[in-house]
Image 1 (cartoon, rainbow, N blue to C red):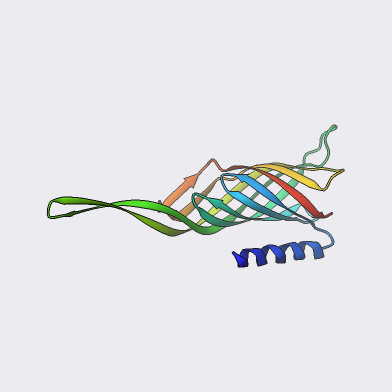
Image 2: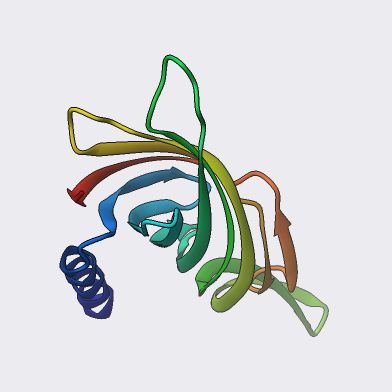
Length: 169
């Protein structure tokens, strides 16, 4: 956990030192819930890092995103984004085991911690407030992963809502 804190501090410091990037940090709730750290460059490309919790475990997700402004006559600072990335972490689960000794069945539960790795897609919309230093986004992040409780898992329903504070602009 102390390495996660160090990583967050390094990313925030890196973002604050860049003159032409928007750095923001906040909270994401959804299929994976945790911290969201995002760096957006002038050419509308972004890197988002999400250390978060899911299925009784922890995952570190990294996404590379591309932004496109949505031009409307009433709303400015509205963006659509898409991207891809990867994640790694672990999950905890319980397995039931049955042993038969001399005709008697013995049942036991065993707690297992298993690593997971996977790939993510990401699409969503994001609004950057003009008068206050906040961003809100709604995203859809389907993914697949290997290992864990199931050897191969696909999740099509990781929908998240994120609120971030803009650290520099």
